[in-house]
Amino acid sequence: MLEYVGLLLFGVLAAGVGAFMLFANALFGPKRPNPVKAKPFECGVEPIAIASGRLPVHFYVTAMLFVVFDVELVFLFPWAVLVRELGWFGVLEMAFFLLIVLAGFVYAWGQGALEVER
Image (cartoon, rainbow, N blue to C red; front, side, top):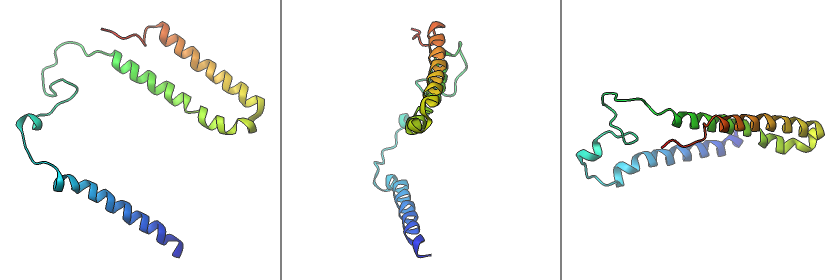
């Protein structure tokens, strides 16, 4: 049980730092309430309003493309660690994988998904 004392001490210290950060703003922060500061705000649009017009979708398409390509390229990190153990088979598999990612990128580019609408 003696080996767990360091872990317990680390947990108590982490909880203490978290609690301090949670309550430090109430103790040390400025207290100047203002009706404008208390007003809800989201991306420059009033959060409670009548829907007027269509919602621009190109922001969501860009975000989805970023997530898809980011998740796919995360596979490069474990491959880079194991590339010597995988040998030429691993290099060819990664080349095939990157070819598929590149084909998806070229397709999205050709469809105009990466263009900025103004």
